[in-house]
Length: 154
Image 1 (cartoon, helix red, strand yellow):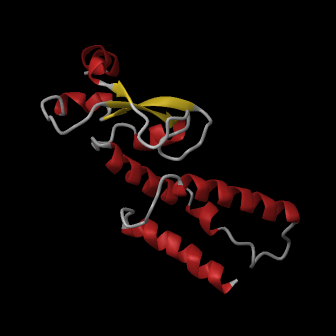
Image 2 (cartoon, helix red, strand yellow; image 1 turned 90 degrees about the horizontal axis):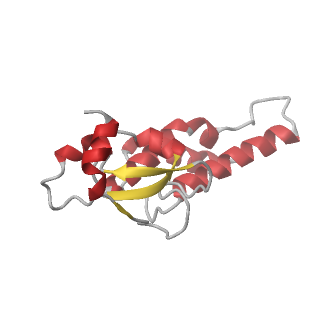
């Protein structure tokens, strides 16, 4: 079925929810830019969960990037989607997290400032709403461990 058809059939099941904040911020990463509506479970898979009483149908605020990263993945709960987004953001922005200029001979203060801004913006988005890293996948934990290890040697 098309998205438009699914919206016509299943949209009444979805209720607006702000699992982390009552504010107009992405519920996955905390950004206030380029906000959209995210359907949980995805509207394209709603028919698979209609008869499951344990699944809650939510509409949440999500930034366009997070919404596109998770899109139609068959993950029906906010908690599971939340940690999947964190893993996808870590993978996507691994270079921002691990960027180091120690081996470059011609760095400028602008290069450092740009790298710092990328790093802190990325870490803020990944850290938003996390209380522990236990639910991240092994690859994400390894990437974040590299940052901690390399930072300790500076």
